[in-house]
Image (tube, rainbow, N blue to C red; front, side, top):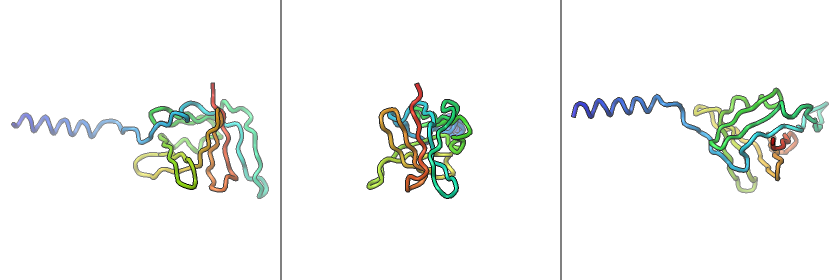
Length: 136
């Protein structure tokens, strides 16, 4: 009996020390590397569409296990997020939640996928959309 209790304590202690499980949920249409090609930026109180000079240097990569990574200065806003999940909201449509960890709630952005194009909408009124194309 004593050995069983010690074994149980060791198992519980070991399992609580395991690496944090993924907080994200993969979404197959989003999986892959996306290159930022355009973004709306504020210029003299007016939003203008800015073309990204070298899209292959500014990417978001969504993995099938719900993890996320970013590359480049133009996508550094997403660097703190390690996970993602996609939700559908009534009257709003799809949105992607970017998850930093267990302490902070996910921050959501509008999501539109069409063929090999991805639009992320950080602003609710779509004035600051980011446009990505799927990498090959």
